[in-house]
Image (tube, rainbow, N blue to C red; front, side, top):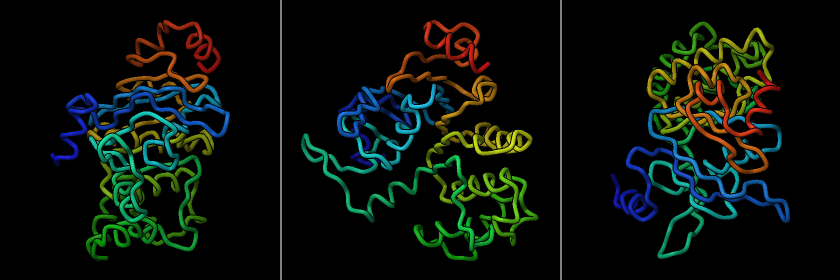
Length: 268
């Protein structure tokens, strides 16, 4: 462990197994406070599922993890390090773009829309970031991409373009592309919400396989059954704050907060 990571873990009281550590995370847009002091620990190798109504701050928090959104306040560390900042003394300073790019490369993110490059084949989409950001030799990147595409069941689609694939297939390519960077954590922002119902299962199966392999995952989802089955912790957010958290099976079966109970009664 680097000195910076070790010092941060001691200074901020980060649990030894925490991959994602958030304390008092706040985010405002002008007078609108979207996150109101969020505390979350996600141990390495675990799956945290975040649920809640639209506008509750779920996606904003996810985007804060990889610094797509800048914090208004609080502490957010990934594997003991700030993503968009360096700590010098008692102050945080934004890192330069090239350093931010390197740190963000260790955090994979999957969106509702697949964000594939339409002019590139499946293979070209998967190897683009490793070859350009990590400077992985093309031959090695292709060999690793073939393994990843086999893992998500798309070995026969290597030379296809995104327009030739179903939505479920495109999202699986996006997962392979994220995995090609060998991330420490994967963030999913409602990855099945744009899919036709019959295509949801194939994406969720890939996510199950990732969870089974020990990948650290933070999943914003409306798939309550998936959260119950795969999640190690379930977090219910409303109004920019965490209302309740706990074991998914126990929390879904017997929510303690009236607001959680009300929400679950509407989506189950």
